[in-house]
Length: 228
Ligand SMILES: [Zn+2]
Image 1 (cartoon, protein in one colour):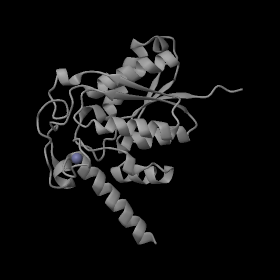
Image 2: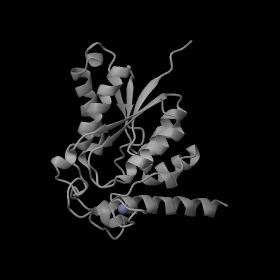
Image 3: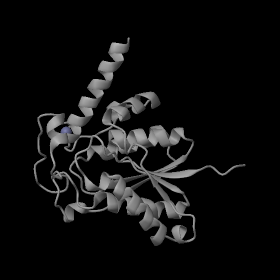
């Protein structure tokens, strides 16, 4: 009997990582999800992550607590208001790293995901970063992922024994629209995912994450209607 492939998936409960979980499962991996309760403002995403994990049929789902609120420095982890934007252009044209950037968040998350992968002997960690329609986060760029892969080779037992753990970001060069299309193809319950930077009964519709997501969904549905 061939051993099934194990993969760790960083699952935040947002659209990108939820689609990623379905995508990885679809490649016949045994999915081990990791979600982080890091003191984020948008607690709803953790509920979304749990539901999506169950639907995907993850083998195991770790919810790991790290108190990044005690460090702060971001609108997501301190009492700084989430900035409202007018439209997609305003978000993508901005050259500044936004205040919703959480200091070193993905470095921290990937480190823990790698530790988990090493323990369960998984060869790959999947990460839902994308650098096309994004808000300018430095830890979502290809250079960051390349550097991290080097670090894993040097800094883990698996790495020095020549069985390194790869970090893969299959959506790195996807547009938000590509991700929505992939989600629809894989049957991801998009409405169950939570991308908003704020908490509440409904997404705010005004933060970067809401605007990029809603715009992509609208455009994809418009294309589908046009084809009919
Ligand atoms: Zn929002």
